Length: 133
Image (cartoon, rainbow, N blue to C red):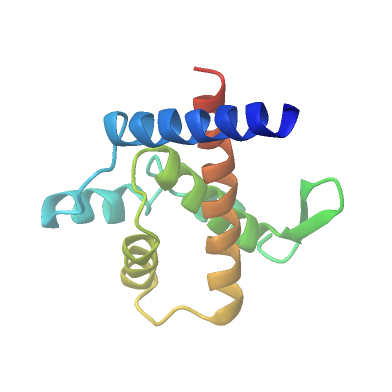
């Protein structure tokens, strides 16, 4: 009996979550103008520039989580990705292409790992906020 009630509750929760996800879709479309604005904000002490403030200290360590440390350069990439995600950019391929355009080169495997980390952390935050709505 408990299992039946639990399954019914789970199905209802999934249905409500799916409806909320559709209603609360705040994805930002990456148009040419938006792309240019993000690139501009990511340079020269712009709102999304996490790299200029760490010039000369890129390889120093920074604590990301309890047992996770990264170089300041890698931490900047995590913060940049996280900020884009929480601002409404939900397409990881768009974030990767933005980063490649910003840096003027293809993304490395390690950079892809840090983008993925920032992306997942932003998704976790979104899931938690939806759970409490």
